Length: 108
Length: 118
Image (cartoon, chains in turn orange, yellow):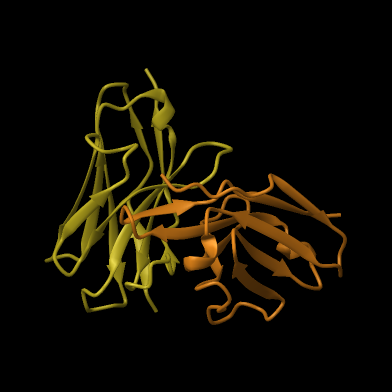
């Protein structure tokens, strides 16, 4: 089955940039979606289809995808960005959906 | 505004089954999937399966195949997820989420906590 690997944690100071990676075999050929999950809450999509933002998501959230790595970038990080972030793809070979292992973003 | 309303928390014995509901409001068409996602305490998100509301055909993740059943009631816009042969490792929050055939989960329910304990 398709595997998506994320770093367990990322720490960033307020105002700086957080970069979260999502590694998968030829992930650049797939559409990657990203979710934010604050403690005790349901996940919320922050980027879909590699780099599109849903309505209401700040421009500070951006995404890219190429080769074997997709990336979620959070610019000008705020305290409210502290959360777990998950990438997700649809594996067309099986018709199944896959989540990444998740990354905890800590704002210092 | 699309909303997903899930049923309340459950406590179950090992070996039994649980059936959770997810009711869609604010959208009157059937061109969407409903996904079910498991999140064990302190763990990540795990996709369990989906149902395509255009034909009510389910697809299940390999890990849950044989134990999970996803069905729909068209008269009430409600989708159900039943998980059988429960064990302690099934203690988790279960989320439903809607996907408008875009292959990502656009809106999520608040989650249903299932506790499996003897």
